[in-house]
Image (cartoon, rainbow, N blue to C red; front, side, top):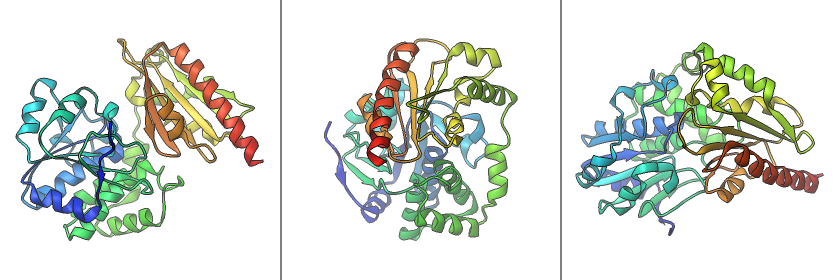
Length: 340
């Protein structure tokens, strides 16, 4: 699949301003950055008098439902997706540029005659659009949407500011990951000036978990494995574990960060078996340093960032675990040996 034509922020703004009916989507299992980017762009465009709608692949995860405009998010129906796309002047996908991440609508999306634009900060790029504004040095797609608004002179109201701040904060680990650069901090400061209260947002995002998620965390802390001489942490969550604590697969977000507290760990893996049915094993990759996990994820049909990536494997959990941990262990050993 050919890569899209690369354009810049000003050209992206021109495409958006020229369209009247815009449909926005993002990747499946939309996280804070995906939701903030999609809903934030929608809000900015509506303030310009555009008709803009966001279509997700599933309902908004419970932890994000407090954010502005989440009740306005629609969910794709494969039976009507083609008609929705045909009625638009422009299709926009944010926070991804990979076919596998737009799930069941990917074929319909790529076959559409409607012009398609991507705004993304990941390394993985495919021909799901004709044009893409990509900045893989940006800490979050929401930071790019902030830049788009600032450089285009679009007003940022307090609700838009909350959406963009939430996306930046969640994708940068509350600004502690290496992807949080000066631009992120500058944008964060400007959004606080617009009315964001970071302490209240943090409480909503990180101090409002349901009890089953804390029990799941306890299971994870007791069962994760250390491999590659303690340099690689691996977590496996099967459906029996989820059912035992009353949790769902939607509660696994960010659990991969927990074993990275160990000083010797430079990379981590999280394997999640679908709660029910025959869906793929979701594998999340993280690294503190040295290892570019986006390259490893691409070996398994996925992609992402240098420090955070993901893939879906259509095989049993045991097989997926064995394959990926073997590969990752070897890479971690080589990288750390070369560094020493």
